[in-house]
Amino acid sequence: LKAVSNLKKDRPFIKLLFVGRPHDHPTLESGDRYRSFLMELCRNLGLESNVQFLGHIPDPVRVYQISDVAVLPTVISEAFGRVLIETMACGVPAVASRIGGIVEVLTGEYAKFLSEPGDEFSLSKVLDQLIDWRIKDPDLARRCRRHVIENFPLSKTIDGIEESLTKALNDKN
Image (cartoon, rainbow, N blue to C red; front, side, top):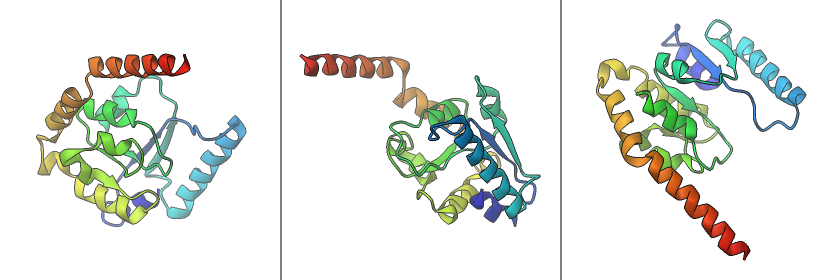
């Protein structure tokens, strides 16, 4: 939200869609408190008209398709940024924190879309460079899809899961 607030000065019509629900909260009540905190932060930053909270969407493909950029600004080390793969498969570039397994997804030319975890200025800078990509680099959508096809095919994923399960079974014995 702070990164979008930084961008709003030069881009007053910027929109941010929050998709999903908080996962790191042990109860629904604490998740609701976190959402309330975010909504209050929106008000304090003057972003009420720029932000929508969509909640959980079972099939987010349409949201990806209407988006210019997907953002995963986590400060928690994720094993794998699945949302990044899904988004890029839809031809939408992704920006994310340089942490955990995310750096294994945003490789090559996409490494420039990594920002420092918890640093809204780093995130603002990356977003500002990418936000007009449809005009500056219209081939980016095709390259995003190709990155996913070449680096994250389903067969490779299945092979990796089977290998992990086999290893776990062998280690148990």
